[in-house]
Structures are given as structure tokens and as C-alpha cells.
Image (tube, helix red, strand yellow):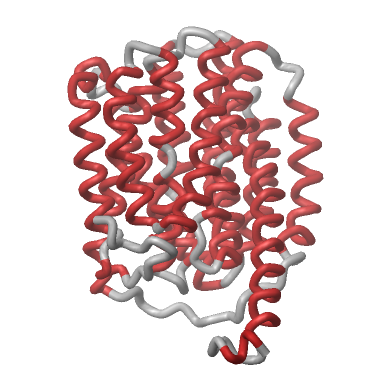
Length: 375
């Protein structure tokens, strides 16, 4: 009665309950797929950096191998995303990814380039397939995006440590990947899928705000690599920074949904600028800066999906392409990271400006509790 008098209608409580159940299911799915995400990234890095432990490749060849892998793993996702969207083959794409990475672990001792190729393509397949499912289930929320992608940070450093220090990881990881291949179809169908919608050409009017968001991602990729690279002095510092990045991604998605994407993300970048600048010299500031700096990642991912709601695979792949473009100068060895240190804070401010503009009303975003009025 009170809900009807308030103008909420007789089905208000039922609708809210259904939304809460759907949200809990989507978050549970994101958590479980996030665990597989950590396994996938750990396997790929262990495959790649086991060549360092084997000490059979010169440094130049190893650097080229890393660039080759990253180009496939990050630069290939947008194309795989389009193919998966056209066929709505998200579960198949994710399972194919885990199978290819298992094959990479077996092939790498025989041919490093074959191992890197299979790992790179497999990584791209898993991210696109699983990421698209999480985006579709999130219904435009950033929290699920953050929970899904966050464990990848710990997976990366775990795989790096395994690859550099041991060769005993190979067959246990292969077994886990094969088990994941059997579990993923059931896992990804546990939550009811939203109604199928035939893909149609994305709205060209959204090209500019999406390009601004991707530009912000590319700059953040460049600065984030600079910050983490400054503290690769011990296994402890690498793991703690990865944990900080994971924490920031999880909190950032939740805060963005609660406070409004534009407000929380832009403010987070502004706060992170001085922390990152100081964090290049002080580890405590680096940890705080990394947490706040990563707030924006799930929001950006969810915002691109809002722009392309019928293309979740493409929406997941485009920010990953921007990550690659931002890291490419360092990966290719054409830019000395030390030369960027004085410009870290100004670059973050530029990224904040691009993010603020990209999350504007032209993207069709609606305010949450606080909305956009604070800016």
C-alpha cells in the first residue's frame, strides 16, 4: 500500500527483488570467471617467461617474443570480438582460449614462437568470450567488470614468478586449463542470458566519446607501466603493487556505480596524479596511487559497452587495444620510460580530461545517486 501511495506501483517490490537476484547472479558469475581469468593470465606469463629460466634465447629475441605475444593477446581482441558478436559464440570463444593456452604450455618447450602464438591468441579468445558474457550480464554496471578483470593482475605476477623460478608448473597448469575448458560452458550458462539482439552497425555519433575514452585508456596504460616498472626491484614489491591494482579495480567499479561514473572516475584520476608522481620515488605513495589510479578501468570498460550494447565482444576488445597502444613504445623499445617520469602527472591530467569528456551526456549515460552535477 505504501509503495502504491508513493507512486511506485504494486509490482515495485517484485521488480526490485528480481533486480537484486539478477545482480547477485551476475556478480557471482564475474567472481568465478575472474578466478579463471587469473589462471589464464598466470599460465600465459609462465609460458612466456619460462624462456628466461631456460636461458636459451638472446635478450633481443626474448624482447621480440614478448612484443609478439602482447600484440596478439591485446591487439587481436577487437577482431575476435566482432567475430564472436556476429555468431554470438561467447562460450565457444572462451573455451577455445583455454584449450589454446593449454596447447601453448605443451608446445613452448619445442618451439617458443609457437607457444607464444598459441598463448597470445588463446588469451585474446578467453578475454573476449568471458568478458562479453560478463558485460551482457552486468546490464551496464561497472562493478562486475572490475571484479572480472581485477584478478588478472595477480595472475600476471604469479605467472611471471613461476616462469622465472621453476618448470614444475607446466603440467599442473595444463590440467587446470583442461578442467576449466569443461567447466566454462556450465559456468557461463548458469545465469540466464539476456534476450538475443541481432548486431547492427554501431551508432557513428558515439565514435567521438568512445575515441576519447580509448585515448584516456592508452595514456593510463603508458603511465601505469611507468609506475609499476619503477618498483620491479623485488618479488614483494611486484606482488604488492599487483594487489593494489586488483583492489583499485574492484573498488572503482563499485564506487562508480554508487557515486556516478563521471564524478568518481575523474576525481580518482585527479587524486592519483600527485600520488603517482611521488610514487615514482616512494613505495608507499606508489601503492596508494596504484589503487586510486585503477578506479577508472572498470568504468571505462562498462562505458564502451553502453555505447555498443549489441557488440559486447568488440566493446571488451577496444579498451584492450588501447592498452596495447599505450604500452607499445615501451614494449618496442623506442621510448625510454625514464624520459616520461617528469610528465607522469600532466599525462594523468590529460587522461582525466579525456575521460571527463568521453563520459559526457553525448554517451547517453544517466546519473546515479549524485549524478554529474558535482562537475
